[in-house]
Length: 91
Image (cartoon, rainbow, N blue to C red; front, side, top):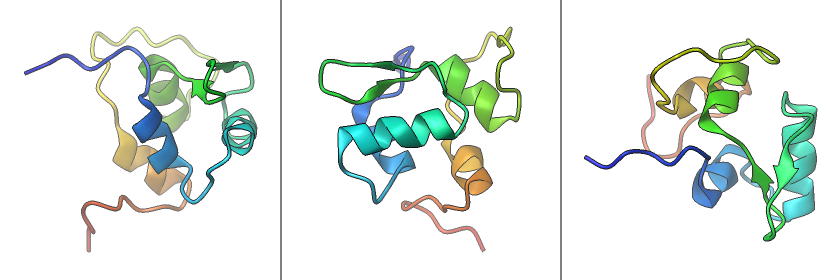
């Protein structure tokens, strides 16, 4: 098993904001949805830590995560914002 990187990958970020494509639009989306202070990478995409992502997706924006686990809960986040994961449909 390999450890997940401390930041969301570009692929994960693009999946979260589908159908947005332009980096500036993606940054605006994240800033409007709980990540007001996100930094921007040289490629124009936002730099989001897994701890930030987990806190916002759990409804704890602005609080530090003390969790020892940095597991990405992408399904919960997408569900919160009215999207469903592409890979698996839960019925």
